[in-house]
Amino acid sequence: MSNPAKSVMGQVYYNGEKMSVVDVLNCLNALNDGATLTTTEAAIFLRVSVTTMERWRKQDGVGPEYIQPGAAGAMGTNQSCYYLKSSLLAWQNKNTVTGSLAAAIRKGQTFATIFDIAESLPYYLNPNGDVESMVENNTLGTVVERVGQNWDVVWLTATEACTRRWSSLGAHKDLAEKVKNVLTGIQSGIANSVEATELAESIAG
Image 1: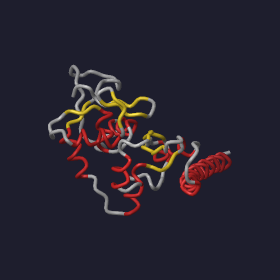
Image 2 (image 1 turned 45 degrees about the horizontal axis):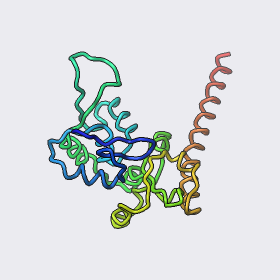
Image 3 (image 1 turned 120 degrees about the horizontal axis):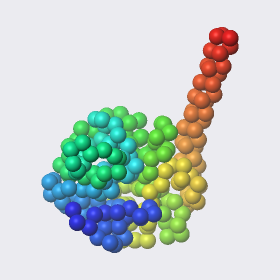
Image 4 (image 1 turned 60 degrees about the vertical axis):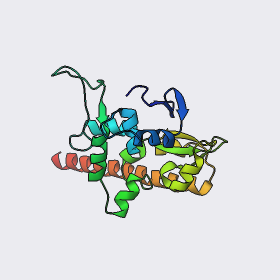
């Protein structure tokens, strides 16, 4: 496509104009299924981060199919990649969830691994610049009401969001607790593995 969507410093630009994620999503949904999307556009379409799209490309069979132009045998990870809208729709249809935990993780309501808290997701900032909530945690009606209003959408990791000021102390504490639980689990796992190594060395010695 010409004039692709771009993400600059957490803001989304389309046709050179600053737009909300919802605005860009509406534009993408209006395209025919044969349209070719950039990685940023595909990320917005699937409601994930560009980093996630790049990570999926390194894992066979995880993310949607993509097009990588270039000569046969070309190497390197910095080559341009594009996605057919039809491929994104097919991938969405294959990745519906049947469990509440899986659904919660995919919507960013629950964080289970270090990858979850390191993934950038869209958050609303109120007119004062405070984090209000994760975009995905709002009803469709609320999202529609905020289009064109003084609500900025920024892409943050969960840890980055925790270090920002929030408009709701309860929501801030809830996210912080989830992030701390993941970090505590990682610390525990590291400690246990170090102890196992020490034990193995003592036995071998």
